[in-house]
Image 1 (cartoon, rainbow, N blue to C red):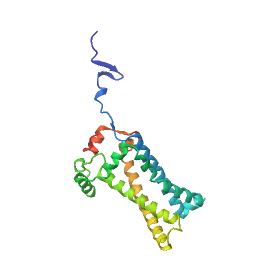
Image 2: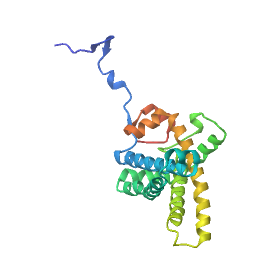
Image 3: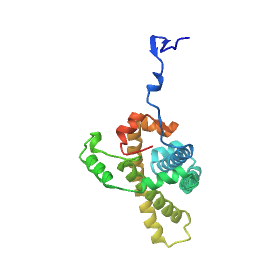
Image 4: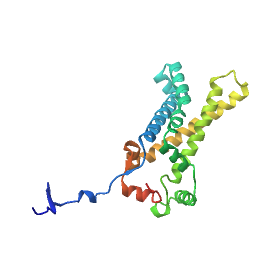
Length: 219
């Protein structure tokens, strides 16, 4: 029986093995890493939404039930570090934390290109995470710790003198506003990059996208 070099498809003849020519997806995030991101995002969303309901009069009147909103805000903030701490049980998550914590010459080059608004791929070399993602991760981690500390000072009023609580309230409120602005920018950038969202949704990304956006990454 003669071999079949071609198979008939819906639109004519298709060469055998054509499917194998399609670029295979690249595994970017494990299930544990996606769980950490989604849970943290949900808790952060509750924090931001309840904070807005507490400080914006129009939202406060619309939502009502201030005591419940305060309770949700306090506990979602207290639980915010828990997903990342639980994620430390994952080897892949720990490996990604090490990558996020390392800046190299290519990261400085990426940041300079971002400041100049140079969007050429060759001017923005990146490994698995680019310099913008590393900066955002570091800033967010620090902001969460500061918000947690100042929030505890505001929650347990008997632990510190009034002047400390006043300072903690000032820092907490203004940092919360900054977090809201930065978070809005983060969401906006994510909406502009469907493939990056796909990586966090499914764990895999297109190989060509990985080569273009993260040329130094070796999956």
